[in-house]
Length: 391
Ligand code: F3S
Image (cartoon, rainbow, N blue to C red; front, side, top):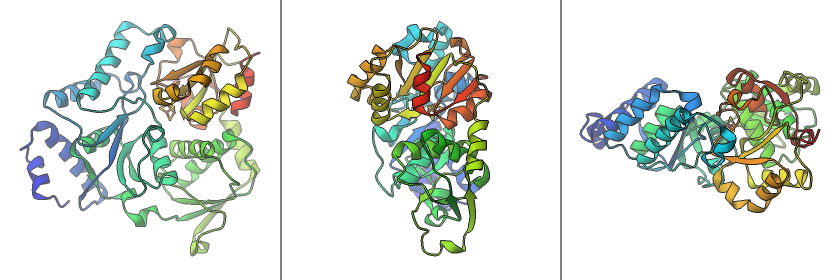
């Protein structure tokens, strides 16, 4: 990979160990994927924050970076942590766990990273169209590429952090226009009745597409939340980082390979996302973290009702959106639910909270939770999830 004189100096260690290490990581990744140069980025979003998912191993590395003076060179944000410090009474985790999580957050903050603790950083600060980013968190990557027109690869935690420190990323994959072009037509030949069905479509497509770039036909007036769910799901069961929408196929696309999705495909995937018919211990909405509109929708559904004492209800969102939605938060919490920030059901210690059965409207959570959280899952649209809370 070609490096400028200044980049070479960083590579050779003239700016210290932390930046040298970051540069070496970027060069390694760039060489691996055939990049010829580094390009400047507008922002970085870093995953690998919850102590539940990363454990102890990366802590020493983060400490060493901080001790060596590492500071982010661009706007940098982080993914959810393992707990919400303002809801500790609800979290009941040991002080050792709380201490380790605080240590991780403190290390990121010392590197100048903004602790937004959300997987939807785009609701806080929307990247400009056609700007290059280095984001980890697959749901945010596919959202940024497909719905915001920004350009980012699906980074891992070390490469996103390295990109934040250097302010650059290797020029390959989604940063190259030729790789963003659709190479498969997807014809959706069934009606999608709610966000859960759109999420199930995402899981179905992710499994088939792997890292292909689809152009989708047949989604009638999809809402932002539907597309967020579909993208998050598609990036969970596959490696797709971008999708295109089209009511009619773009010029030239008639030559592309094509794929049809029928009701039976959707039904099969939808049903596979539930592993139980048992009553849930927890209902979770907010994967990816809720937008202002989703919190509004939940508040309207729950208004004037009372959540049963034997069910926890979590609506997860960023602290930023929570603060912007004070009236709706009051309505949800008045009914006995919790609007939880900084974490989510997947990256927290669900079993320690006494959860064996989780109900959710998120296809991504339903896909991951049985393995990552060892819980049974009931998958259903938001309205049905909220309805379950009163039984
Ligand atoms: Fe976000 Fe947690 Fe889902 S980090 S994308 S809410 S698994």
